[in-house]
Amino acid sequence: MLLLAQLGLGTAWAGAQREEALSDAVRLALAAQISDDAPPVPHFQDPRKLVRYLLWLATESSRLRKRIPDRQARQALLRTIWYEATRAGLQPSLVLGLIQVESGFNKYAISPVGALGLMQVMPFWTRQIGNGDRMALFRMRVNLRYGCVILRHYLDEEHGSLFYALGRYNGSRGRSAYPDAVLAASRQWQVRAPLLAETLPAHPPDAAH
Image (cartoon, rainbow, N blue to C red; front, side, top):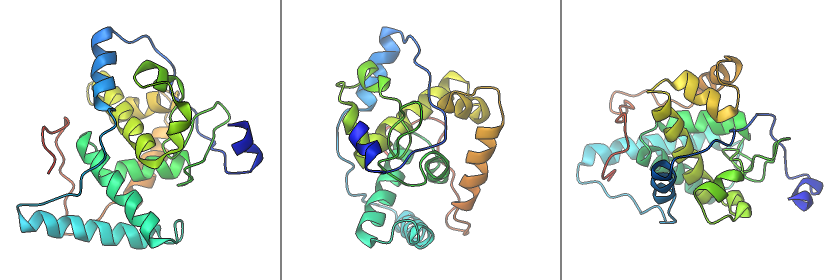
């Protein structure tokens, strides 16, 4: 991690989650949710859902072009964000806004308190619910899986309050600066079209595809 910092691969200004004691049931449930299954290629039985997905992908790819010029890398990131956000019952625009605030889309970002990667996940989570490999948090899919699962966990713990869940994600619960920043950023990533209303379930669906 020191080498990465010396190479100037990026730092993030945001705070970080605080380590908390988890019950065995919660720890095992979270561990199951971050299991290392690769995101499948989405298949849609309903052509309207396919149209919504393709509209979303094209719109967000255009918006992200300046930050990630490589089209293949950009598409891979967006497809993974869509899958992981939907899997966790989160709006993709929220996850995009959080990434913008946390890391500026730099997958090698390191915060002053040691949070890593796109969604600035604290390494203690790899001990709590993973295999202990903190460097895996620099891998796009792993980082997004952890980040979405953790945010979903905080949202459930806070009984659906996004304000408090985002505060816990940042380690600043009860203060408005961070939730306000993420929500403002997420509005920039919303895709406004009649066929593309983001109405995702409040809890992770059994089958997202």
